[in-house]
Length: 115
Length: 112
Image (cartoon, rainbow over all chains, first blue to last red; front, side, top):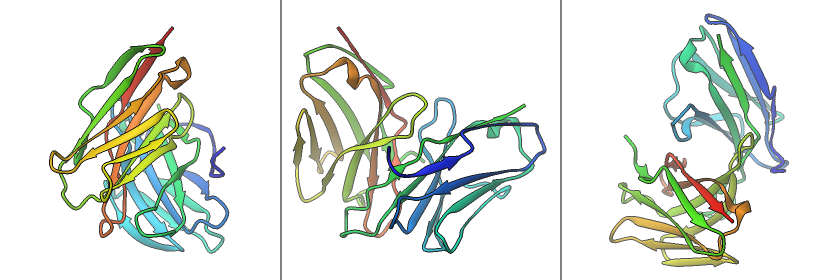
């Protein structure tokens, strides 16, 4: 158990809909990262938040947005869903330790299926 | 633009033998490298890491080697066990880049 929790575990929805994925980081971790893993793809970095502020952005579509709340939990919002958005979505957290030791700890993921 | 590449999607090894998983990178700004292991229906778990100031880091059965001039790293598992069967992801970061870059993973199968 990494200490990172994600809900829901599974989500089935229809094209055009909007969903929200939730992540609670490990106690004390200030950074939250979101990743997408599609079939045959590696972990595609979407976005990072640090202590409530957006820190880095990766391959995140404009239909997707995220935020980190004062209690440090984060939500990833996916809207106007398409079939291709079906994937595993992982959240990871990290604490700003020593330089070069920003190891990320992953949650169990949310499997999104868009029908 | 895949800055971290794992060119072997799968590897099959007999129990007790050595498993060698390879990873190449293109960005010379990377200075910290990690390996993650992922079982089905679970998130990736951190396995071992290495800083660019080292060329080897060992943790039990797992050793990571870094060849900076070749921009290549490898993970050695000795001896391999059936429980090591999983997808292994190589990842890299640079101190000014602020994020991890992942390879696509290698599926390791260890058979009895």
